[in-house]
Image (cartoon, rainbow, N blue to C red):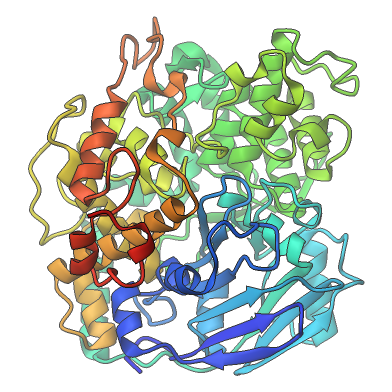
Length: 626
């Protein structure tokens, strides 16, 4: 067993009740790192093609990253992964906090759940011992009540819990997996997979330390990185510490990074009231800050709205994506209503990006008479209405009335509504995109349609370089400088950024410090003892990304199935705002990225020779070309 790992994967079959351990070979760890890298490696081998995402064959994996729990700074994240019921593609979502380190301390590098239970259960993993427990009394409880009840039942307030709320139980396709009362592994609709399996929660507790190969070197790297962030790091570090990502809301809109009014507008011209939902106007509700495990930044916050129609008791601070969604996309300048909408999503277990996109979609349908007031259960879904934002969000969370029509995302909602509603449904293959506009950084659009999890803003790629923040994702990677609206020659650059990003994710590193000169190769070498180079880092990232992509190809999906919405392309171009007149050439960007990855531009099939180089020729022979 290599250093940095616990050497075991726990399997639980909910149908039979059987629980067992497996020990992956050392080579698998080095090839797939951890997190969703390990998850996709196991799923590709064990799960048949075109399995029902909400059926017993879908393998749902909970996996911390390689560096999670090791003492590496800002490395605490875990992934939830499986086939997405929202998109039909490979699906994964990640979350910070403390569940990931605790899962490792409990003795495992991953927990894989298969089958469907006959009645609700939850899985406990404590000090290397696992058991399934009756969760019928928990079914129907919100996330906070679930955590409280499990801690009381087990007599341990320190257990860490990943759970679903009523939205996941009802198989809402935008349901999230929740942790710490309000932290979300939000994307891909994996909360619905837990609901379909009747798995209310996974509960972990442990005290096993993660063995590290060179603790002195790890301490040296940690000290150097933390000193850099404190003394000469990017200004965003101080902003995050004070405000979290809530400090970026107004600036992102002004730059054109986010849109307004369901992506129809951009810039302050589209939403002049944006200053009311950013920075100090947000954190004035903050009771205290908090930090994830091993993080010196502390961007989290606990909020209190003490009275009024949008009262919230000790909820989590709304972050940028939620402020942009329930705020700028809906033209809503009421912070208290946004906080309330977020708190509802956190308690019911719903992805705030998807939920807020659905609300904005419904408002635009209402404006055009596609949804009437009667069809909206008497709600006046006017733009900018905080009452409408909160009331509709609650209906979506509870799957009641008009909420039942909207609870599976905008693609399904538009199909149910008809009457031209699809023109206002902003999604990529079923998933609502994050609030980062491809018209500002075109390579964001490449990631939206070419990453195996569509619509994922965190896949980013070369968008960071287009924005001018860095020419390469970390020291030791040499890439040419690119221009923002350059459309040829970007494929290899996008590929390098994307491949590096796979190691960020599978190592458990937070996305923010990953872009601040974090030497992932050196941290991984110190923890594992491997002679892990930058070249191996990029090759491992390409291996993981290619296998995630191969999963989709095996499902019968093709590049042409993934379309960037016209509003994110600039068709027609906006007449005002920071991205006025911009129409991006998404076809060239995607084509050249596929060519750089050696994926066929028509079928998506990876080239057999490249699969051989990546060590995937045998595993992915069923999708190889050539």
